[in-house]
Length: 370
Image (cartoon, rainbow, N blue to C red; front, side, top):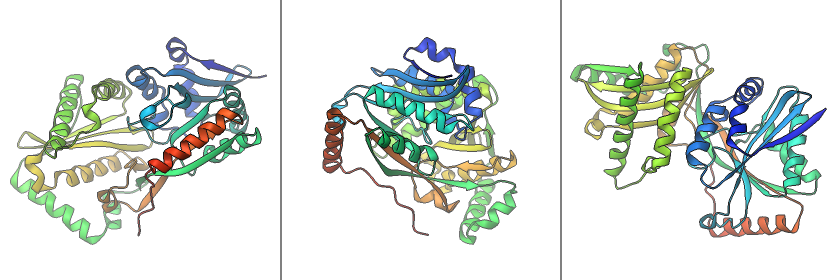
């Protein structure tokens, strides 16, 4: 028998940790940002006045689907003056590839049950950072439309990534432009000539705490010198990453490296290995070493490390900054999916969102010209 249940409190969310992990492992969307650990940590630090609305779908006693959602209050600053559903771990925390988690071979059954629950709730749904090419992005709108509702999707982000499956460092370098190959090697030789160079990973809890503190300090100093704020000016986001880095370290996911020159940290890179993917999350640079291109060198050394670990993908995550295309020409696309119920409320929500997009046109991500 098929059944659905709503989790609306933290104790229940904690009680399904192992079931969540089992389901995620048997799904087509198994990634770091859908892990229970990432989402639970986000909820602890970033939930504010949201309410949990996690939909569970079971077939007999087996969990076959999770919709990791929350009820978000009106956001007047974003011109969304109404309650709506959104993903846990959405917003500016940096999550990519968000999705419903559906067990392999039961995707349609679980998706239908989730869409029925969403329809019954009667709220507008805003789902961000979903992978444009996933079946989820097409199936949910179809089911909502069958119930009389409507939907709208738009591309919002590009995630460049590198396919390094079964490659050596030499294999990979041969695919880069000759100009970039030569530039990287010349800068690395110069660095090794002028300094004693170490590219160090964190190995102990004390080392990790010290490295994270140094990472935050370098990142904030770098952007403060340019008169700009970053997400790490938000103490909630700093607290999230302090906690999650410890969790990731315990799980074997954390890849936190420091590039040290004569014992001084010139750059830090904060990233994760989850299954066969490296996620290049964020870097921090010491402005005293800008002329040595330490950001570019740290990224190259990180890719080399990922190859040595035998992973399949080095994911540069959302935003198509120019420097990423020195290392790859492959891309994935992320989208925002809006779902509206078949009601007067749904019509009002849709018209207000249209007005918002007219007043504040959303940024559109375009494929970078080859």
